[in-house]
Image 1: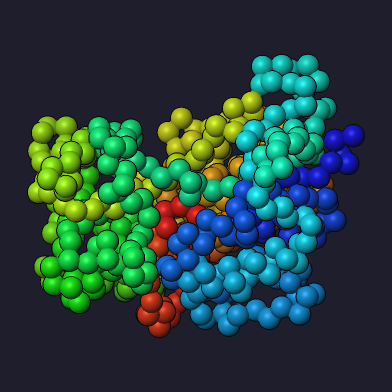
Image 2: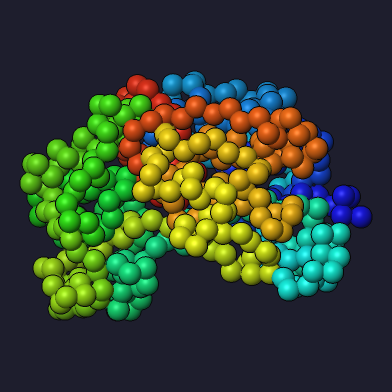
Amino acid sequence: MAQENPVVVIGAGPVGLAAAAELAEYGLPVLVLERGSGAGAAVGEWGHVRLFSMWRDLVDPAAEKLLAATGWRRPADGGHPTGREWIDFYLAPLAEALGDRVRFGAEVTGVSRRGRDRVVDAGRGEQPFTVRVRTAAGEERILARAVVDASGTWGSPNPLGGDGLPALGEEVAAGRISYRVPDLADPAVRARYAGRTTAIAGRGHSALTALVALARLAEEEPRTRAVWVLRRGDVGDAFGGGAADQLAARGALGQRARAAVEAGHIEVVTGFRTAEVRERGGRIVLVDAEGRALDPVDEVVALTGFRPDLSPLSEIRLGLDAVLQAPVELAPLIDPNVHSCGTVYPHGFRELSHPEEGFFLAGMKSYGRAPTFLALTGYEQVRSIAAHLAGDTEAAARLELTLPETGVCGGSGLFDEPEAASEGGCCGAPTGPAR
């Protein structure tokens, strides 16, 4: 029977592992499938970035109970870890505590109903889910009572092109374009940008982090230049809430970026939507749809957000908003045109449900293209989902969550100087993974 099958969780990041801990607390069988080689594989790719959040907001309650039984000691609440520290001191120990309920090197390539494609109605709800998995040993099929997709959006960055498609020539010039915040503490990465001109596209916190880092590099390597390319007609509120931000580290980031611009370390170009990427004399030229060309640069860092990869879910009946690609009940609550990360309403299994009963998107992937996700929000999501699957209707319906206000979430924190943060919450990670 489907009831005897485990709940399959896709992704062993912060929200996926929290989902497993919440389900385990109810005594439900659970299996986490992670294509990476360890816990928080995506977090590891931005491990050099320091979070806006304090430790107090980065540990799921059920996960803490599970870890406490192993002798784990919670880090001091007021600290702001880097992504790597989040893995080392929390995510990796949590995966170890979950034991064989977590499988690494297991990539989910498809989800469906046993014996039913998405068109077939007859007996659909009585059939378990089938989860197709690719491993080093080959392919296999796992039956699941329910599926929670917490795989995030980190692997699907938005392109540089201003119309949502890759700009002409973007793929050809891929070797000169990065979609991640550069780790300038790495000598090889530093050499790529030192003494050169880099265009930074994007206006979120990831872009601000890259700008601040390059401005610092320019102080040490005077020939280093940065060009900040914005699609909007002005900088507007891109610097965030400053001193009024309840996430002090996030506010400090915006203030540092503003200071770098005012000091002349960063050239600002507004109203520019890239349509074409040209190579000229070994350098890169960005061109917009009207033919306006920027001065040549050596490197481009495109930090324009992320989008969900829905291709493995083509046989699942999803109910997604046409704009955000988030669940239809959730989309109005997270619309970035209306909400910052602190004004998103608490939500649970009802808002995350789809026409395919027993299937849920959770974490950053549930937000589709909205950049306002918070780690605490993800923990609340999976707590409600786990309660629902366990039949605890009261707990599933009870939503209690207070979020820090001010600023638009979805970027990364400072590379260092954790003392800049005296207040904290749980802002989302580099425009992609939860944190």
